[in-house]
Amino acid sequence: MLDRTGWGRIMGGLHPPVNRKPDAIEPLTPEEQQALEIRWYEGRMLPYVEWILEFAGKHREEILRTAGPGASADQLVAVVKDLIGQRGTMHLAAELKDQMREMEKELWYSGEQDPRARAEIKQQWTTRHAAAWRRWRIQEYLFVVGLCREEIAARLQDPGRPPA
Image 1: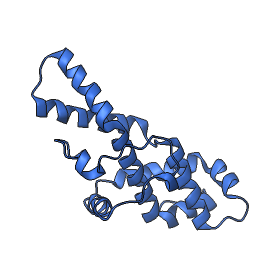
Image 2: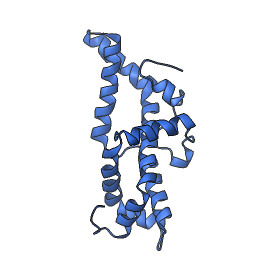
Image 3: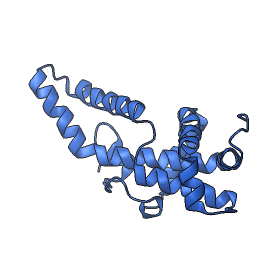
């Protein structure tokens, strides 16, 4: 499934519902894994590190309670991933801004100027791409959690720890 925004190519046309646990999200294809690695090395996911650390700090008590007493670093990180998958969001304002940017690209591709038609194009984007966009964003977050697992676990175990 190809489209002008590239979402169909990247996402393979998958549109799973939001608020699914990370283990219920389909495994990454080799192409998706490569795309995530490229985005990471280009620095496009660096803001997610701060968001994830803030998220873990904000939900620290819930994470520790869910993981149980004496939880290992891997258990703590698994709970963080689970919460991210359940919530389906981490930084709502930034996510909305990014979705609007994608809609604006679609409007630019169409060259549409009529306000009513523009609203319809935005609605069509939402219908066609919002679920895949959300799935991809969750996959990005989970990828970054995997890369930052030691820092996340250390911060959860010692909330006074200074940033690395």
